[in-house]
Length: 327
Figure (cartoon, one colour):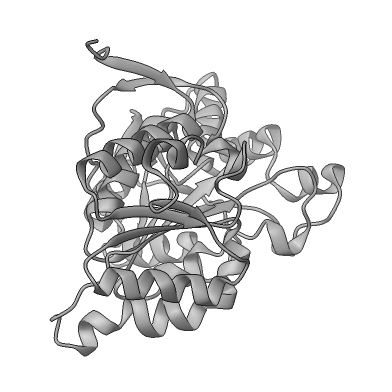
């Protein structure tokens, strides 16, 4: 049977399809994580892998992030391409020594005689009132470290292409899956092609202001851009795709073209994406107005669905801020 040229897949199905494609192509790829063989595990994004490839290449493991990242590092050093599925990025704090002191630094410390091609998937984003230890973005901590790659897809097609690049990279790559991009399906090629890291995409063309966005905030930025267009503000929306490497060339060029910039960040404001983009742009001295930052509140996520909703930026409030700031 001939496969269709395109498939309509939601984010979870796109991830599964990409893993199936690469696992069939490369027998060195294997997937492991906590409960990933359970039905519906990790928002259905590992469904069917054990049935297709056997439990030697897709298997459940105990709850011990430090040891599990160490397992991945050792396997990667032996020529495998492991994919560690961590339930939430918050729990990777238990493995920071492994990720930073070992996975990120061993290539440099050996004069680049070894590589650590480990992919780590971790979940972030708002949910049902999950409180502080289950909802932190935290990706800026990893993006600060040389030797790591940090990926934040904004849609199913983006998730598929960026994940494939991660699976083929010789560096340790943290793929941040945001709950906000799970859900709606979109068409994509049945044969997934890699999307290069460090290359932003234009999600919407515009001339008056640039919205730099990442992860689920790309969709939010598009909603804001549509809303302010009625007031005559033409916003270009750039999906940055990766926090490390960051597409500094495109950031500078777009900021120079519009002279006005807003950053839509899924993380906290301090020491994060907004600050880094401000630094990159300031080196070129191109802004006509001060940078506007859109982000969650600078506090820990509360533990009820109602309070959690208040923790994140609201469309009408951000639209008002954009109009006031850039008009």
